[in-house]
Image (cartoon, rainbow, N blue to C red; front, side):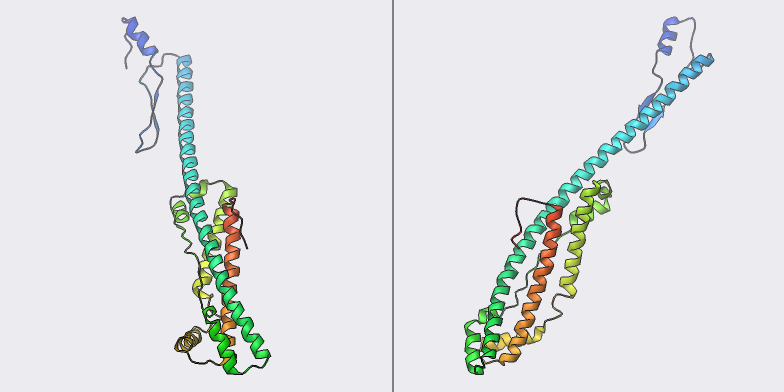
Amino acid sequence: MRVNHREPCRAYRVRCAPIGRVVRDWNNDMHFELPRVRIHSLKDFIKHYLMIVLSILTALGLEAWIEHVHHAHAAEEASRQMTAELRHNLAETRESLQKNEATLQLVGKLDATLIADLKDGLPPAVINQHIRAQEHGFQLNLNWPGLPSSAWDVAVANQSVSWVEPANLKKFSTAYAAQRETDAWVQHDSVLMLDVPRVINFRTDLDLGRDVDPQAFLYTVQQMKVTITSMKNNLQELEKHLADAVPDETQGSR
């Protein structure tokens, strides 16, 4: 822009014009627009240069502040979502533990009866009578939680997990890692000690009112007891990690 010395008011307006302005285009990066002024002396140059530097530093500081606010908001939202999800999983885990404990009590009672009868040398017919009296305890009712992890997956996908406080992030990652390990164990190892076809055969015999071999039946009951106990132990370990990640006033009963 030219300065007309014959128009002092116009010249005054030019000298008082802003040094520059910061433009924020939300579709692009922040940039700085310089005014078009003439430099008449070294002093004017230095002044103009310092103003430019100050404006650039201001723009960079504003950019950093905006990024910080965005990251803090994203981290807060991610933490809220993961906390809610883990609390749900903790409640589901505790419910599964209660159901498995109830099943284990029935199987354990049947197991104790069989051991006592066999040690006492009772006839198979008498032992079968005792089995039928407690056949409701012969059930493989394994229960485990679904353990969703969508909140963690989303936080990893949009990188907001990297802005969560390190201490909280460690708890979250430990809890979700424990969930993955439990899921893998349930899918691949939970029934390794159990002869499932034999369980089905014995269940069929009992439903038909047929006698079973007490010794072979005891072996299967023992397998069921070990399997349910293993499930219980794994869920208790998971419960501990979940409770550490999202502590609440509810105390585990196990």
